[in-house]
Image (cartoon, rainbow, N blue to C red; front, side):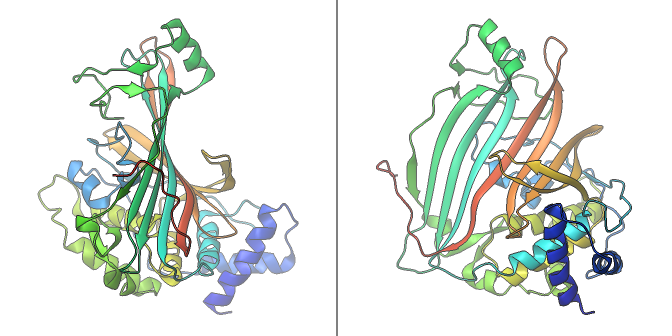
Amino acid sequence: MNNDQIFKDRARVLDEDLAGRASTTGADALLAEIVSLECVPARRRLLLFPGRALLGLAAAATAVAVTAPTMLSDSTISVGPQPSTSVSATAEPTARQILLAAAVAVEKAPASGDYWRTATVNKWMLTDPTRSYVLEGSRSLETWLAKRPDLQYWRIRQDLGVKPATPQDEAAWRAAGAPTSWRYPKNMKTENLFSVPSRPLEAAAGERTAERLYGKWKGSAGDLAGKSMTWKEVRAIPSEPETLRSYLEERIGRLELAGSGMDVEEARAYILLRNCVDILSGLPASPEVRASAYRILAALPGIRAEGEMTDPLGRRGPTLSYQEEIEPGLFSKVQLVIDPSTGLLLAEVRTNTTKLANGRQAELRLSTAYQAIGWTNDRPELPTHRN
């Protein structure tokens, strides 16, 4: 059985598994073949302790850079191996199976259009200035990149307001007088879980605004590894898994990682993972390139399946996770939720825990939920307020 047929058949079997249908004898044999299939050489492990420079190089927080308190901005990161689970035809799909099925599905996406559109809802949590309760803020963001030179680049955003994160936090907020804005001291201790907001946070939602993108955006098709890519460069990205991995590793090899206090090889392995996620979460690469990014991820260790979960917008999908160490001994759990029908990312969620002033353990989550990723011939619905 050739690889393409295995991927196609796996997508069918995975769809049936997720729908709760019984596995068949044919599915048993197919799963056994999938597990033994190796498309891309695997790394030995992912475990690193890079410093601040790696965040910029890997663009780990790119999707949330526009939110008021940028999470994980001054932290270290590591990706730790997690225990694998045994596989059977009746078990939940493994991370590898989910990724290979997503590769097949994403190959069917449209390959061109007038605009490459990415629409997200970014949510972030942080404690109030007194560390008495947890707040959740959110922002919507649309980016319209014009492939045609006669069309304009646009970014449309709206602050959606700040509120207590949970009913327990709401009770503490009411006890504190139900404030509608929060001002933070510059020297507030944050355990590297979030940056101190430089301006007051507001409970009320802001106005939807549009910004025409100029300057570095002229002719840009997005970023990869923190560097702007032209449309020509994106079209030149190789589409086979082995050549794509070599291409990414060659780009990563140009980065100045020596002398940064981190294990260079492990840092490169982490950046490779992040580059693949970046391709899937926003770069207008071809469907074949995006499928190969999934196949590279399928060969990397440290990623595990967690069954289905509901994303921040209420959508359900199979979920993958890995760990980042944001400072020695302090880990952040990263979850990727995938739409099995399209292979597109539904959401990326990071979760940490912190201790409030009263000793209560509370979760701090940072998420990007993707409402749209892909080509369209539509035009943006521009608000009245434009920059």
